[in-house]
Image (tube, rainbow, N blue to C red; front, side, top):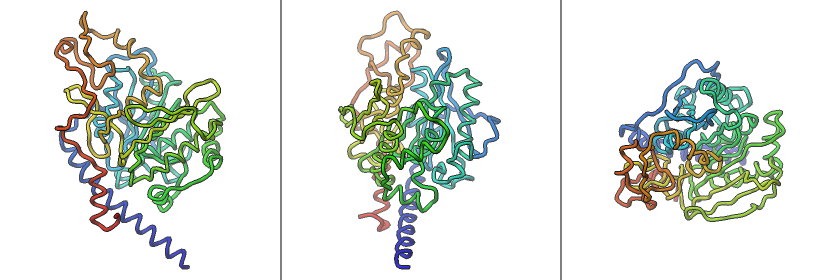
Length: 399
């Protein structure tokens, strides 16, 4: 009886912490969305039976190669598809590298915080609920735009990251790779109390236990999707240990050792990589030192800079969206797309080698300034993690 009472008290504490955090996030998100965030997305209706009652929005660049790839993007709680696209810059990457973007957007009727319901079995089983809605969107997009079925990818932040885990586990035959940003392992939770426990405390299981959850999610037996994992070391909303549990889940699925094949430093942050028997990089992990809950961004000074800081969109000097696209092999076809477009005979040599925003028109090339790799100290910077931490401390929920 005493243990039950302690569990109830702990759940109530988690609930207060979550409500306080979401209230602060919603205020920040409203400010971000009301600041004339451009909407580059087009909504599609009638894509299927839509059992999860989600919205489908897409971005299709003007120039595309034959049979382009598809990237599915899932936003976090309190966010919209348009807001997350503006901040993460995925549609700008699509312009540069020639692929189609698909956003699934949550509705408040399904979840008042606009979180994907990654903790509800009816939404995370294959061919059920929200997971099935997203699968239907993928199929509709493939047929409508003549996309390459072998190059379908998925990524998401927070609840969207947890739903990314769901899509990779339940439809490994559909997705070539995925990227989980500040997310959780598949089937970490099957109820609201378990969801809070996974987020704020974390749940440790053996690699085999985690891996079995993925193997049991479908009849698929390989090959398995590549997985990129991103997490901030100072994340107070989804405990950083979840990144390690995701790694355990997918190294077991891929039949890899727990220790990485090699480690390196990228843009000042540690990256660990696991390779398969063929020498292919199939799993990577970035732990962003000192970063709170959000998507890592690298923002420059000029008008063509990539991404925008906002709620859960944090300028820390590394672009997760670009690095993820690179890991998936999407940046390798940039030269082919560039040749298909109008450009001046001479391109200034001081242009950045890594594209950081929309591609300029031909008459803009001469006037374009080189990208600044260091963040602009004078630019507005919204650290939502600090806002949430302040709110939690004010409420007495955090020291």
